[in-house]
Image (tube, rainbow, N blue to C red):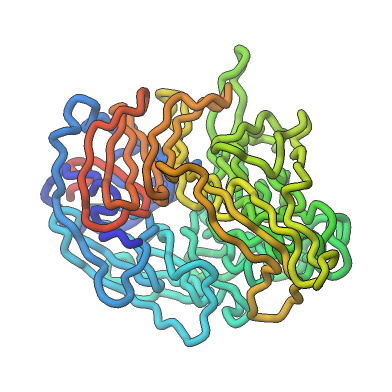
Length: 543
């Protein structure tokens, strides 16, 4: 699927036309901290580092949305055009967006004309696990910074696209790559790594955004040494506490979707991917911290708490999905909470100050790997639906096949949710599918896929796969649902105008009433929409 993009699934958010000039460019720490509240630009992934993807704009609302018309389209074109999952950023009348094969553009937001384009020179032999997408960059001071498929971080001059610095994240020949949007926290460039299907060890790291030099590194798998100011710091967890033998050395846990940050707790939140290999019989134990949410100190990189959504994951239920900070009102109290819709089909609410479990509720149908969670936050496994041990099969080559729901593509995949403080609801672009899955023998080999499993995706229902749901985090109830025949692979945006925007694989950008789920407007852009909408007041941002 592709998305022509500047429409950007953003509804080109939106056609609030105004003249513009090119003033001196600078994005400050204050701009980033206030991004959720300001309406004249978008300088962070998630419309604020908390990742709520909510805009206080009321210019477009339930009453006038039917009058929305497209302003222009911008095609990424050429043989390199693939899935367009990048969320755009906007500053001083310029749209900044990345594309497949590690490309980036600056676009005049009024006319749709290209200002500059950057194409990374990718070497032969890159090992992107799951397509050649990029999910966006970050604006800071006079730079646009993003990561590439050959595991490099690149800082471009925001005015002309010239390279200011380029630093290697890790060895792409080992399976490392980079697809997420980095973020700026307290003057530091924060990023993760991609490549968990190749047995690379996930980590979070902080760099000096002016130079690209490393400040700290924090591996997410127990037994690995962290780094602070160029020196070894502390070991993550305790070696072999939840991993057998040397399995922790190639344990996966890739931090491939990026993170969020909450200034109230001064914590960075990251999700971690599946353990390696998928064959869980080879690695008895919880396998920390794979398939988890972790909270880190932005100054040192130390892990302050962790919560494992799928301990001893045997279904590829990556725990990378975004952790969104919000204030939960429940039983007459207000709790500093965070929520995440996991690949494993459960919607989790945690205390964001300490990671304590509050609730877990299925948000897709027929979840059958676990029947629920204990009050302490441990899954209640249905062991009959764990793929069988191949070493106990007749030929030793293929374990018992099971039908598991959701499938490894997840109840929700990478495409981000939105939270509206107006309605108090989370909006989840989910998919209803399961899989036939089986385990196979596997041994780690540098640069080779490290799965030990086979699979077949199976839709749950005949009439739809995609399901956009509005969910109450206090009760776990689905307030409304919109069913879509094809999978939903784009992100969600809500606004103070009572609207919800998202895109579909059939090529529609749609607007819904955020309270009722009624479809209010749609427009077909001629190509599947798999990116995340944004909105801004272009009149206020004109120079």
